[in-house]
Image (tube, rainbow, N blue to C red; front, side, top):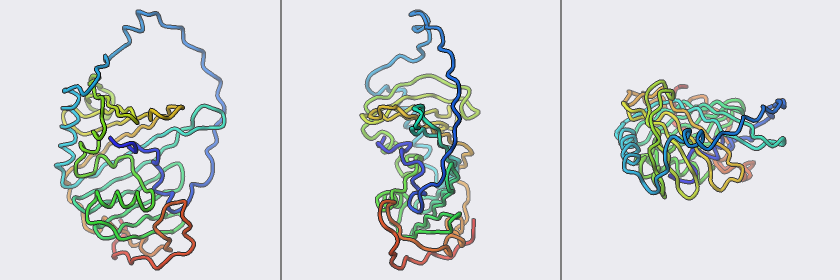
Amino acid sequence: MRKEIFGLRATVALGLLLAASGVIAQQAQPAPKAPAAKSVKQKQESAVAPYEPGLQPKAVEILKAACARLAAAKSMAFTAVISYEGPSLLGPPLIYTTKSEVTMRRPDKLKVITLGDGPPSEFYYDGKLMMAFAPTENLVAVADAPPTVDGALVAAYETAEIYYPFTDVIVTDPYKDMSDGMTTAFYIGRSQIVGGTTTDMVAMANKDVFAQIWIGVEDKLPRRLYAVYLNDPARLRHVMELSNWELNKQVPEDAFGSAKASSAAHIAFKRPDVNTAANSKPPTAAPAHTP
């Protein structure tokens, strides 16, 4: 479970091209009345899952089953709605949201179409090239890419700080990524609320982040992920809802490119803090139909 999981950079995919414009206004609301203090007995009764140090076998079993289901899929499509808190001048955090429609086919195809509280963005990877496209501004960055989805995700992050919170879901070995540095995992219980199905709830942590995941009891698919970074004094929350799962669906070749993106004005495929005014001639994207 890497430090970047559920990402402090949930909207960085667009940062490659432009900084998000505008501000979201928020009116101050009257503070709610403080609830009556619970008695010691009530606090004890409200405790749901006792903490067990180390890696609880039941929790690890559930995580491994989910990761195995994901790793076995030749292709997948899902919707990821990500809500994350950011500091405000008033003190209480503001909440921002993105929605990504994700399509992936192993070993070398990926498409991510993202709407959010800011400019939309699109990302295409066809096994040879990766394109980051800002449709509103009609700007595209194109770069050569490694021959696998895993490699392309690493290259996109290292080159341009493009990162997706659902990375651990689509890599070749999800459990390896998710369990990296994991020191704690314990089973919480079951939920009948999340994802419209019965889910098992598991908590896990490493030295950087505490996370909770809801996994379908029957289909073994992740439905919700919640994370708090332990070194964040504000303990800002990051939540990802996963839905509309389709595994092993047939995906046409032209789904992983965009004619509109290919014909947009080119800028350099670089980090947001790198001057992109002077661009060398970028690679030519392969022709594709607009998805």
